[in-house]
Image 1 (cartoon, one colour):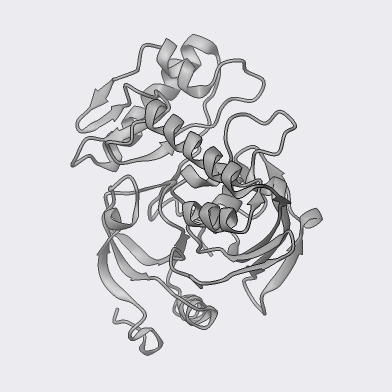
Image 2 (cartoon, helix red, strand yellow):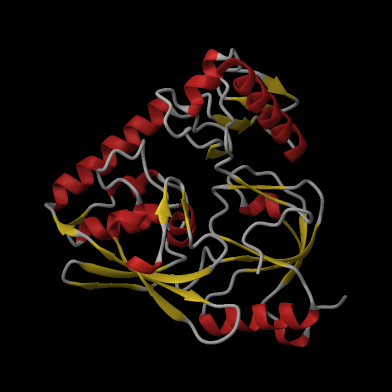
Length: 308
C-alpha cells in the first residue's frame, strides 16, 4: 500500500530497524516514523488504526531484538519525542518520555536533584525505562528503580485525550510495570536535593563500573534475562556456572565479560541470538531448575511488542 496522505513528511519506507536498535540487528520496517509532537504522534496512530496497519512503539531500541524478517507495519520511535520538555518545580521534574536517560541524569545534576544517578549508564529513554521499571541490581527495599521516584505518568489511551496516572494507579515490579504496552508521553519525578558534585561522582562511578563489568565494545541489548526471584544467584551467574560464558553461534556470542549479555560481533542475526537464548534457558533449567525470563523484548510480525 502507499503512504496515507496524512503521513506525508512523517513516515519513511523500508527503514532498516538495525539502525534503531542497540543490538544493530533487524530487518526493514514497511513504515517508520520519529514523531516530535503529540499532534504528529496522534496522526500516525489514528491513521494506522483506520487503515488496519499494525504498529509498534519503541524508545531508543536499547531493550529490543527485532526479527530479521521485514516488519509489515509501522514502527514508531519516541526517541525524539518532545526533546526539550524538561521542567523543574522544587523537587519535582516533568520530563518527556523521549528524553535520553544519560542526558536526564546530567540535567538533574545541574539542578542538584538526586535519586536517578543510576540512569546515567542506561542507554534508553524515560518511556522505555518506565515501561520496564529500569534500575540497578536487585530490589532490597531501597529506591533503585525509576518507579520508586514517580509522582505521575501521562499516557495516551487507545481512544480519547491524554490522561494522567498517579503513582497509586501504576504497578511497578522488578523489571516490569503496568505501563508496559501503554503509550507513555511524559512523567513527573519526585527527587531530593543533593550536592551536584556528589551526583556527578556517582554517575562517573557507575560509568566506570559498567566499563569494567560489561562488554561495551560490541552491540547488545543489555541484560537478556531478568534475575530470578528468590534466587541467590543472578541470571548471569547461572549462565556462567552452566559453562556458557563465551559460547557462540554464528556472529552472536554470550559475552566473556558478562554472561547475561549476548553481543553482536558484527553481522549477527536475530535467529542466532534467539538460538543462544534457547540454549541458555534449557541449560540453566536443567542445571538449576530455574526458568529464566526474558528482559529484552522480541519484535516480529508474530510477536509484536508495545503494539496498539
